[in-house]
Length: 257
Ligand code: SF4
Image (cartoon, rainbow, N blue to C red; front, side, top):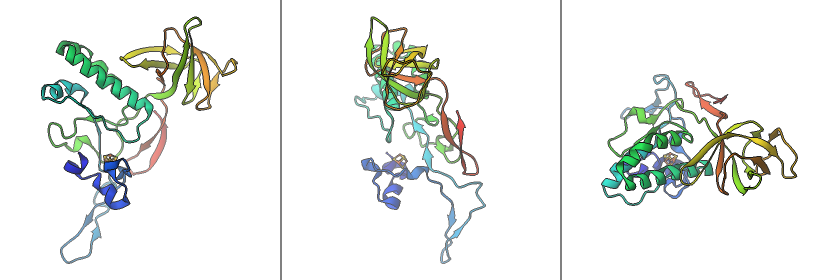
């Protein structure tokens, strides 16, 4: 799509010999660019200073979740969801949302409408930036581009996945992916758009010793959960994490989001 419509990704092939069409893009749309003037017969000259800041040419993220009915009614029967090097947190959330949306609409348009806002809210939990419909309905305006500072920031953090569950003791064994504190407010979710919010309780290490804080990625830990969970379920922290935020002058700062 970028090749055919915007040409942004071709820049990766041209500038770094990394083929965007085969998954190797060097994220050239997110680099910082400057403007040059090239008067006929004269030397190229920078017009730096006449624009407020170097700019990127990044599109905001594509999102068609609200328009699944349009896609189905127009004969689309297979969806490919794109994402460059996305995390398991992102992929699980996005595929869960679109699968739920398609199933709901095929059941009835009313079923889809009833959950539409929930689907949008869910996608925002993994959004890295704003969402837009890209080229689907019209050429994107400047509001669907990201020329300067990032305007939307992630609020959720993937902290663990469930690898086992003991119903008798309501104990979940989890594989840690980010820092976990006893008492953290978390959301556990899984296929079929299952969700519930809870707090981390009875956090223990692999030897059964209690922990206030776990900070070793991929360690196996246990927690007590209020509902049944399944291997493959994901846990995300509703607290915000540290992210890099680009400021208007092009510098980036790390902030707690
Ligand atoms: S990050 Fe995506 S949109 Fe940007 S150049 Fe690479 S493939 Fe294209």
